[in-house]
Length: 417
Ligand code: SF4
Image (tube, rainbow, N blue to C red; front, side, top):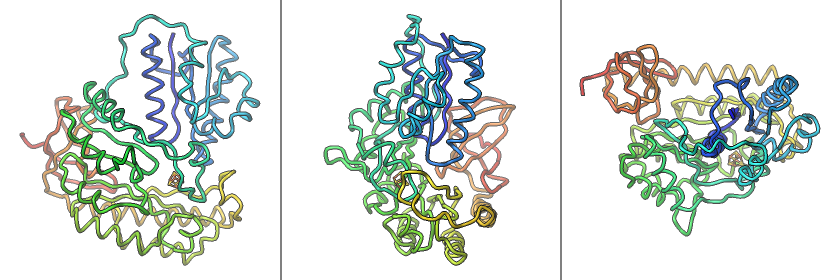
């Protein structure tokens, strides 16, 4: 029996899909290279943005045609959208065999085992990746006014330190060199009085683990000890994703982000003072209800002042059940588009300018992919670096002299190590 898992959304979903894949492989099922060859199809959904939901509905439309041709196909939907719109999904796509919300993933094995013929082969394991994700906490209770996560994933729950260490060791044994610790807000990790800084110290003791990254950090709580640990611990990558969302205090307040731009700026300055080679990237929401031209200009000015290594810019779309849903979505689509392109263009110029400082520098990079004679790698700052190589060096750490820079990547020549 072959299966296929389609994943939409964030790294949390990628990680959940990995767990589903591990379970199905352990039951003797095989990967299908293509959805059309699968006997079991699972769609892992996201509801953070309208576009993610649209993608899920299109996938289900295509899957319904596949089911018409192959009535023995088993199909299920899991994840955030299944959590909050499960009933309407079931009603609209009657062919689905199961719908399981993000909070019910622990029931996956029980539900799916009714449908699968186990192959008895229990040796298969997921292909190992150079970097793998380990979820350290689930849920969120920050209730940013635009966000559906607290409603679909529930309150914060930290995974035990032992479980995180065991999972990380398993990944390292499979061949992973870098671990990305995941949580909606890793800064609020707390398990039996071990906070996120304490957890980082424990994880970094694992033999064979070369690099640690994490996401996401809420700017409202970023303790000094965490900054000091990132600065002092060689295994921790010098990269922080710190969503700002807006630089207008009026908008930040309406977003319920619990910080002002002034506080955010001080935090960035403190981090940069203690970790000079840090790369900070950020998220921005464009066109939040009530965002005026002046509010937007403040965000643009902040992007120029703070010089982020990269920006992930999203156009606001109202999500049912969130508190911002009650606000009038009063920034027109055309204005959102215009602000998006102005900010993106400026952000790309800034990233390219920052990358310029790397010209002629020798960067230690970890190679994570190889194709057509080109290695794809990343330095500690999480910048993509390409270089030519006759050999596939995936999983190796090598030194590359940077010769060319672009907005989102760099390229160079490998040095003899
Ligand atoms: S911190 Fe805010 S944006 Fe992030 S998941 Fe929680 S509620 Fe959503």
